[in-house]
Amino acid sequence: MTDSHDAPPGAPDAPGAPDAQGAHDTPGAHDTPGATPGGWREIHHGGSPEAEEAHFRALADVVVDVQRTNKRKSGSQVSRRTFHAKIVVGVDNAELAFRTDLPADLCAGDFTAGARLPAIVRLSNASGTVRPDDSPDLRGAALKLNLPGGGRHDLLMTSYPVSHARDATQFVEIARIGAGPKPLVLPRMLAKFGPSETARVLRNLRRANRPSPGLALESYWSRGAVLWGGVGPVRFRLSPLAALGPPDSPAPPPDPADSLQADFATRLSDSSVRFALHIQRYVSERLTPIEDGAVEWKESDSPWLGVATLTIPAQNTLGPNGLATRDHVDTLAFNPWHAPADFRPLGNLNRARRTVYAASAREWHAR
Image: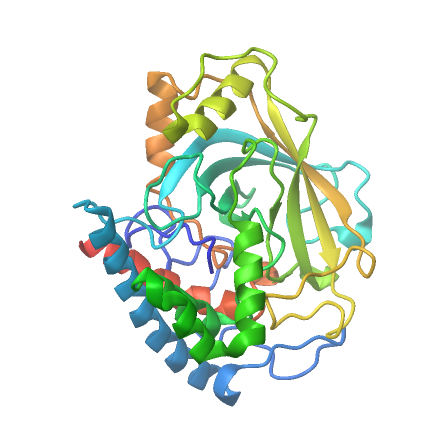
């Protein structure tokens, strides 16, 4: 759940508001009780959608407490998102263009050969507090696609292929421990998860939280699976296209606190920034599990398949209009459940987002 880009209820695309294309935030909607024709299924905590939803509501209370703790730590009077508090790039004139030769068996809904969808893009640092850009951190990418029928479709990603947590329960417990006194983090994790699982969690966190060479150079993964229409479950990824080093027009040395923002702005001042969108198909529960967010879907088991290109056109993101656009993008809700029903998120972590994001957003708005 670390790629939360929640916003207050009543803001555009706030959690809980179904869009014109049939996005669903209703607990239990379209849940899969058993195996599907493709051989995949979802397994609910407690044995039923109702029991799982009650559990998620309890987890949401813990997340709100973490949100309040982060606010106290920052010393700020401003309530922020639980995670991804600092926006680095916000633009509203990007485009996701699907391959004109996209194979029919990869097409789904409005994601068809030659489709060109306007996109809003938010790139961010993942921490729940605003920290300097040169701090070790996870980075996030969130897209809001405008669909031909008038609805919206959000795609959320982070800069590491897997979650440090296997499911929502573990994720929230790690967040709760991490928000406490630093000297007690390791002993509390060992007591809760044991040596082997603690080592795995800390290893993933260490690898994922690092300085970034530049947000135009990062790849961003969905980590969890989503339904891709008749294609079935997939994971997706954005990877940089033709951005292999520093920008051609060097800028004055930036303030380290905003170095990622300055780097991206310099790149956009001369030319567009482009990313390739790829998907991986579900193979089997053993190789490509849906419920365990900490397991990577290996490329050797499920190759990445190119489906589209995201283009952010050249522009001045640090001018008055660019900053106003960024500030507007920062008010928007980005939620994986803002999607047509045929693209609903899958797995425990994704199902928890439906409940936890809404609670986090209410807290942000209320405070």
